[in-house]
Length: 153
Picture 1: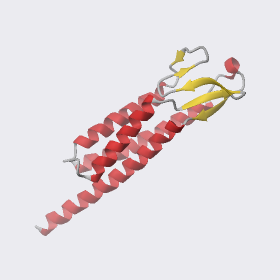
Picture 2 (picture 1 turned 90 degrees about the vertical axis):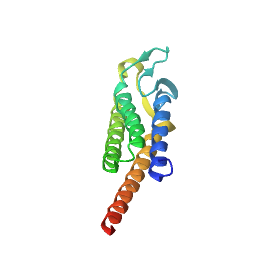
Picture 3 (picture 1 turned 90 degrees about the horizontal axis):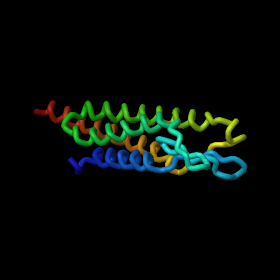
């Protein structure tokens, strides 16, 4: 199982997704000062209170990590593995859409004029997306190889 390159791609994608779940993905800035820190599940205001308005980011990325981990262990069913890789790609694209919406929706009455600055961990799902695409390509190549060997017999 671990000798297959798609397993390593899937493992790397799951690790990147979990790291992104645990780290700060952005901040709201007003006049050069951090007003709020944004995480996948919550954002913290200047007083340190947590507001769970960004929960859709967490609700998309957590199943992505879980499905990616499950995909590693169903290596005997390559068709389902390829399908789950495609589903994870769609979930990550959905995460970026929600990330853009979260970045644009801010209450200007509370903090005044603020702008959103993404942090470097916000790039990790994009790298995981690339790993999912590479894993899917390798899974499909394995499936073609198995089919060609079945034809020879």
